[in-house]
Length: 123
Length: 233
Ligand SMILES: Nc1nc2c(ncn2[C@@H]2O[C@H](COP(=O)(O)OP(=O)(O)OP(=O)(O)O)[C@@H](O)[C@H]2O)c(=O)[nH]1
Ligand SMILES: [Mg+2]
Image (cartoon, each protein chain N blue to C red):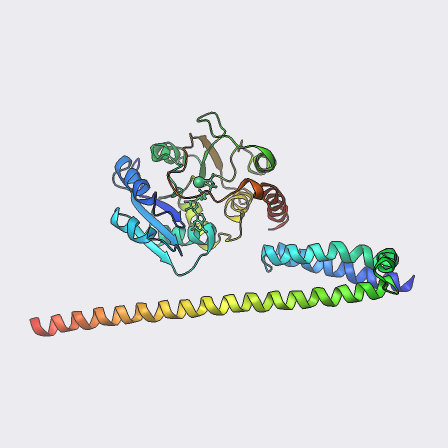
């Protein structure tokens, strides 16, 4: 009973945090939706940890709790992979931005040099 | 100038080289004296070059930001160049620029005017989950905005200075955020929104962004975006 209280409260706390972050626009929609979906699974499980016992038996896992741990780790790994992927995309984008910026600067410098040239030959 | 107001037409475009020249040409023909800004959102075809040749100003984004990202750039341009009115038009030729003066007229008493299909004019039809999504969005957003809205995802809208100012600093880049969330946000801040019936035409070239298979996902996302927009401040 005590355990259920601890896990249940943790789940609700997480839910509150995510909803508040979304409300304040600190989380992009796609990440917010991901975490909300996770909580929809986690909160019932935190209140009734035995929920997965039947599925666990079917898969040959000794108890529902170990199944949850296993799935949790797999899920966290997937999230890490996803974040690495996002960071890679971001790095590619900043690279493109830096190139654009350098090209613009080169063009402006060339323009300015050409104008200075014109002024000095005129004068 | 449209009705004495300095007007900027903003056209977000992604790989629309087949239609963009005609769209820009038609806008400039129908509305002499307006400026046209095409925001090329990382197209891989010749959209930017074709648009420039047709007489539009072109802002080329280095990579795809989505319609919302392109539109914030457009509104920033409108704000920085002191336009009275900014009007978003699709690059596929579905919006008829002859409705623009009507939209601008209504901006006298409103802050954001939407050119809406399904409001009596034209014969544009949508079926299945996409239609349910539109019905749900219309019902909820009409209540939020205190006005009848039948086409909440329309990409044909006119904004006055106050709204340009707001959109230049705040415009969501998320999918559906550019239409649904901006409406909630605008209405909540007390701006007046109105819709005008417009006839919608078939796209001139290129491929539509929505396949029927995605309709169901669209419904789910529309629901999620709407819920989020309503709880957000
Ligand atoms: N900036 C930008 N514009 C886009 C993007 N995707 C589509 N667009 C433009 O947004 C406008 C509307 O896109 P469409 O694909 O016609 O979408 P729609 O009108 O809602 O749907 P259809 O009924 O299929 O025409 C067009 O001008 C497109 O070029 C994008 O990723 N970035
Ligand atoms: Mg279209």
